Structures are given as structure tokens and as C-alpha cells.
Image 1 (cartoon, rainbow, N blue to C red):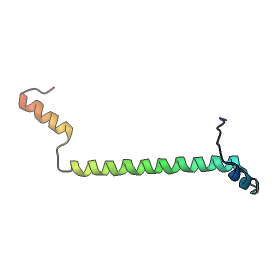
Image 2: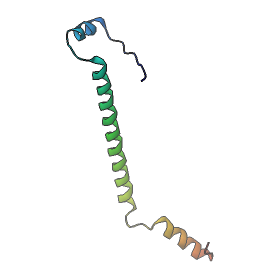
Image 3: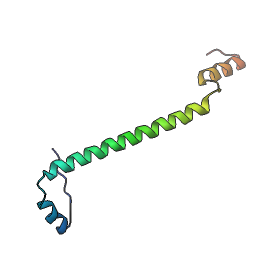
Image 4: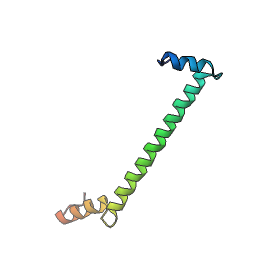
Length: 78
């Protein structure tokens, strides 16, 4: 397990001492939650980008069709 250090002010430390929880586990859990939140946000962005690209390309020829047409027009089939 990797160790990280977090600096807090003295007042926060005093307040933490009055609350009986496992602060290390709390912080690990908060970090995991933030990671999952960011992953979901990134996935949502990717879906939106994909939808925009897909909508723009509707009605247009597929790349394979364009290449095939270009090759046919120049007289080659490869």
C-alpha cells in the first residue's frame, strides 16, 4: 500500500480528534468516490462526443464507400 501525506491546519486536527472515526479509511473512501465520479463524468463526455459525431455523419457515405468510389473512378480496384 502506498503512503500519502496530507497537511491540515491545527484547528482541523483538533476537531478531528473529537470525532471517533477511522480517518484513513474515510479519506481512502473519499478518494475512491472522487475517482468513480470522474470516470462517470469522462464516460458521459465520451458518449456526448460520440453522439455528436454520429449525428453529423448521418446521411454521409461511409469511409469505405468513399474509398471504393474513388478507386473505381480512377480505374483501379485495389
